[in-house]
Image 1 (cartoon, rainbow, N blue to C red):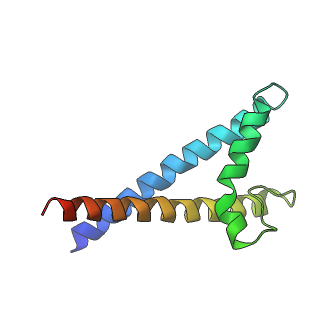
Image 2 (cartoon, rainbow, N blue to C red):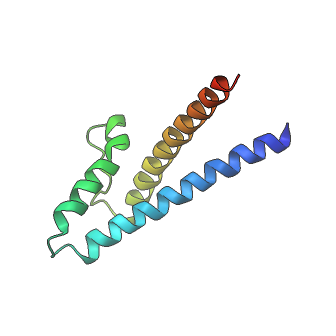
Length: 102
């Protein structure tokens, strides 16, 4: 039983760090390429990324002008919500796939 729990947790952290890398790449592209024509694309991606946090409260964007600590907390909360959603969808599809094989 313990081995299964460790495997699930390991899979959860893999999803978390993958999403963290994707978020960091999008934010870095926004910061460094903000003056170029790619700014429209990165702004749209940031708006899409911030959807889970805006569902909690409409006044909570992905990034805020309230300081680094608050921005990191909101970003971490948003990332955790996204990780739970992706992990849950992955588990549902895995269970559906296993039911189809019987």
